[in-house]
Length: 174
Image (cartoon, rainbow, N blue to C red; front, top):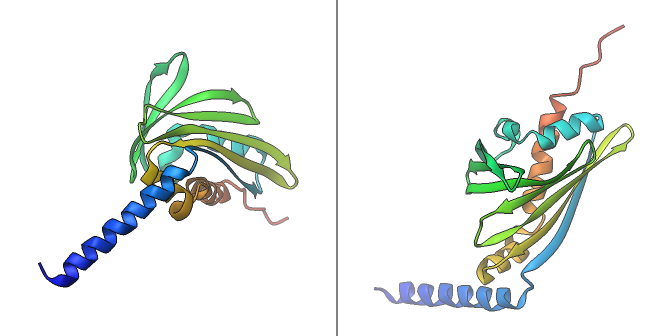
């Protein structure tokens, strides 16, 4: 091995060690909220958010959804995509304003996403609140300082916005 390879390996090891040390001092749980307004009705936004079978049609990173047998009486599914597989279940569904999902069976992270959909003229506001937990210190560091707690939720809202823009009827000439 050349000297630069040894130095590079030592530097990477030190960076990884610092990330773990910092991550171990961060709390495992966090809360983050994002929100966006869309020019569609509350019902249209509700339908898009709650139709998890349709996620592969519009969510980046979700290639397939498989409906699972209910878990403790709750609807459950597995999303497969660029990040692997993630099993989810519905914790609460109060049409058309509140929808809560929970991660099931993950060892590295967990938590819920609470969707609140409210009327905001001339459309609707979709707010997502993540009450999350990251158990691994390195991933906790990455979630806090690299990816950001809001990263996945922001992607969801961006994808939702693109999808909903296709649902808006084009005004007809008089």
